[in-house]
Amino acid sequence: MTRISWRFSRVWQRNFLVYRRTLLVGFMPPLLEPLFYLLAFGVGMGLLIGHVHYEGRDMTYTLFIAPALIAINVMSNAFYENTYASFVRMYYQKTFDAMMATPLTIEEIIAGEMIWGASKAVLATAVMMSVISCFGLIRYPDGLLLLGIAFLGGLAFASLGMMFTAVVPQIELFNLPVFLFITPMFLFSGTFFPLENLPLWVQRFALTLPLTHLVNLCRACAYGSFAPSCMGGLVYLFALTLVLFPLAIAAMRRRLIK
Image (cartoon, helix red, strand yellow):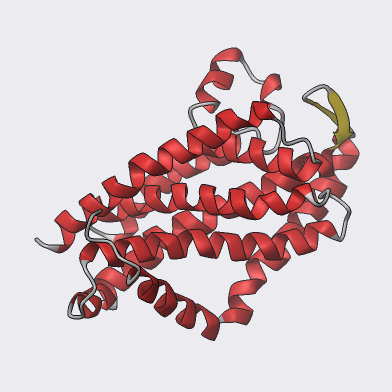
């Protein structure tokens, strides 16, 4: 960590310039995904379910899942950017090799990759917020806090993704963390139904998952109910990032200097 300077921003800049070339394609998923989900779950499931009881208040199912879609978007953008995309840059395109021939250190290259992953999550969140806000499902100005939460959550999942990139020998094996880690979080983190409806042991398990805390924070920001009780989730994500970020850099350093 002591070898990281502001030169990591050059890695961020390189990835942003590449992303800008495919901007229209890159904006399509965060633009259309909330529309599809809101249409399918909000109109379809919403008519069947009606209202949901969440933290002492009744709300429409559409209002319940909208912030969760933002949290899922943060997780997906950061995790996939620092697993599949980083692996392609490292293994197939040899971009990391080219960067290591410059004054950049390995630590700066990996830090730039992870911060770019978090930044991409923020960009996608801003696009999703613009769509979801059209339905009146985000309360402002509290809703602007979603951008900060997206960066923190994005950095946590980017670090987690880079940990897998450091140990996975073939790109096909990313299916394992996706199936064993991402998919359970997608289903059991209070995204599509309140955790209170689940057995107690599942609720306790869900509290160990980072997506659960990210979903809760996104709901608090979107509903304008951010309170001191939300600090637990913030501390969880901050501590997770504080641990995983240097571990991911150390693991990638071991892989790249073999």
